[in-house]
Length: 323
Image 1 (cartoon, helix red, strand yellow):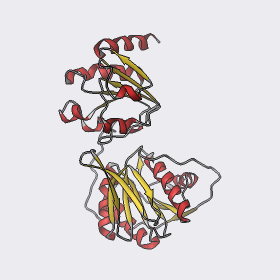
Image 2 (cartoon, rainbow, N blue to C red; image 1 turned 90 degrees about the vertical axis):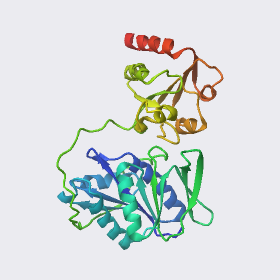
Image 3 (cartoon, one colour; image 1 turned 30 degrees about the vertical axis):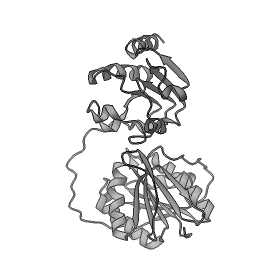
Image 4 (cartoon, rainbow, N blue to C red; image 1 turned 60 degrees about the vertical axis):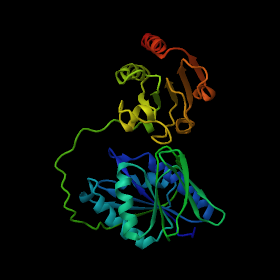
């Protein structure tokens, strides 16, 4: 990897920097320190100048700010145009995006425009002895890990939320904040209205209650939801339940779904496939509830409850309500 530096696209969600950007900064800072290069960020939006100093505190050397009313609402074509111009100017070796809806809409457009290789949905980035960047991503629905090296001058990646570690904030860090002129684009996109905000992703949840094949039918998710509510958490599910249409894909926990790192993970009727265990391995405390004492999840659980979930969960809910 040549010392041309790393550029991170900073996504904003609900008026704030998306947490995945701090993870990208953590990895970007690590890679830059090893190659004696710099980390820069590009943040686009309206009323975002305050964001720049926070990005410096988390590891950015330079923050390029595109602050204009025309960028108040995300438009992939407008963001692409300005990012492409910035990439042509600073010539980074690596460009990083979050593997979010926004990142997935933007990264391929930018990669095509600058003729760069793009590896999507990465779970790890590793610097090789020759200085090249090895990109690791799930393949074949999570059954294998693909190790990718990019041959183009610029390497572009989208990275899963919670796959990397966020860097430490240092209020004393110094960096350069550069205000850029905005290239306005008539993309033809008009915002007619905004729907209700979606619930937060399970990736950012502190408590996840995950249902597995031990659940008898889709209606029994109501029992799982009651436990999640009592704990102040969210509901997750293993892949078979998602494949059967019992719950939507955004609830899928595991390497082929969403990697989670909650403070508390409760597996309800979860056997523990390798892909699922890989997606929860960094959880703080793991509780497993299953009538089969031989399931794989029990081997990594901090607390194992051998019993019928239909008897155990109501008792847990009752105790939690009393507290």
